Image (cartoon, rainbow, N blue to C red; front, side, top):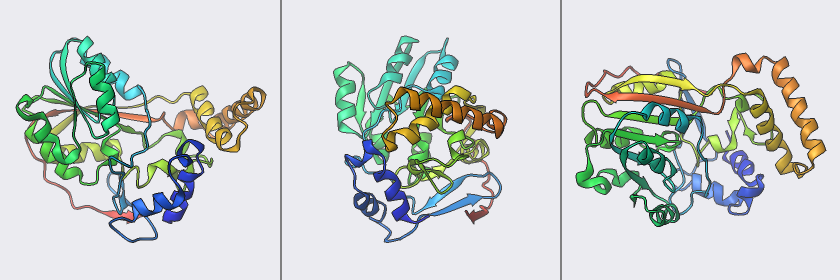
Length: 310
C-alpha cells in the first residue's frame, strides 16, 4: 500500500485535514523507516494482519478523537456486574469507563498518554495518570496486581505488543481478568468501496493509526503465548440500519451533501438495499470485537509464523 495513498485518505477527511496535511502523515509514518509503501503481512493460520513498518502516532501527534462507548464497553460492563476489586484501564481517555466501573463497585485507575485527556479525567475526580506504553508498570506502582485489566481500542495501535504484554504480566496475578476491545475483522465497511477505504480497509486502519488487525484466532494464540486463556469472544452484531447510516456518512461528509436530509435518506435506503442484496447481514459483523481472558501464568509454545503479503 503506497504511503501516499494512506496520507491522501487521511487528508481527504474534513475533520482530519484541519489538523494534518498529507505531507505530515507521510513524514510521521516514515520517521523511523524511510519507506514509500506500507507492507501488510497476513498470517495464513490465524488471519491476523500486521503492518511493516509498525509505526503509530506519538502522544503529541495523535488525532484527538472520541470513540465513545461501543459494543465492547457495553458487553464488558455487563460481564463485570456482580464483581469487585481493583480495575486498571489502559488508554482510558477521559475516564468514562472507569466511572461506570466504579458505579458497579470497583476501585479504578486509568492510564492515558494524552495530557488533555488526563487533565479532563482528573478534573472529573477520576484517578487517571499520564503514562505511555513504555511506563505502564512505573505508573501503577504499588497498586498492582489488579483484579481486572481493560484496554479498549488499544491493542491494534501497539508497536511492540510482546513488550506491552510482558509488562501486563507483572501487573496481574492468577485469576486476573483481561478485557480487550478492538476493530472487528469482518466489519461491513471493509467489504464495500467508499471514500474512507484505502486498499482493503479504511484509511485509519493503517499506519500511523493501526499497526495490526486482530482476529479471534489471533487473539487466542497471542494471549495464550503470554499466559492468558481466552474465556469469551464476541463480534458486534450486524445492524442493517447502522451499517447503511455509517456508509452514507462516509460518502456524504467528504462530498459535502450529508447535511441535506433528502439526499441522506435516499443514499441510506440505497445502501440498505445493496447490503441486503449482497448478503451482508449474514457475512459481516458490526464495527467492534470483544475478547475476555483470564490470567493463568502458563505460557503456550508459539507456533512458527507463516505470514504472506496481501
